[in-house]
Image (cartoon, rainbow, N blue to C red; front, side, top):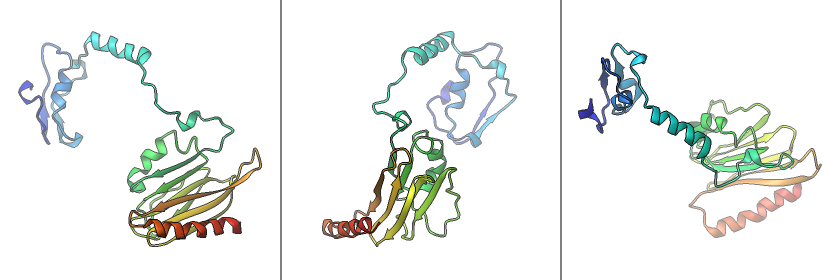
Length: 212
């Protein structure tokens, strides 16, 4: 077992039965396996797993005394009276959607969420629905894609616009607490877009905003 320590193996067959318990022997034994499907246990006996008491005490100390402090304020700690808006370059949302759904910074804390470079297509049948949010897709252009999530009670008006190198979703929302409205633009600009092209697009977006 120890001869294989540090190795990387796609297939591992283990028999860790022993008359004597060795602390963390199970970890040393399984660590060379690169995937769960390649790990095979023979006559596995959970009672043979042993953990050092020093390790248990140190883990308890770390959990109580040495918690890692975040270097930023997470969205779920923002004041509840605020309208929380998130914009993220997802780089293939369909690959990370389950992770996003589980992240408390997103759907449990935000009111509007925009994802750029979703790399979804208009004929994509993947279920991107989230309870209490309206989902608005702007993914007609291959390899780009915008998906916007808006709380149902906030949205007044929305439009999607797509150009070869620029996509944006323009939405007007109203905060039901303050009854104030604002216009928000979720935009993706391809690296191929020149500064002059982007400058020409700004008045167009401003025009859409004035029309609302």
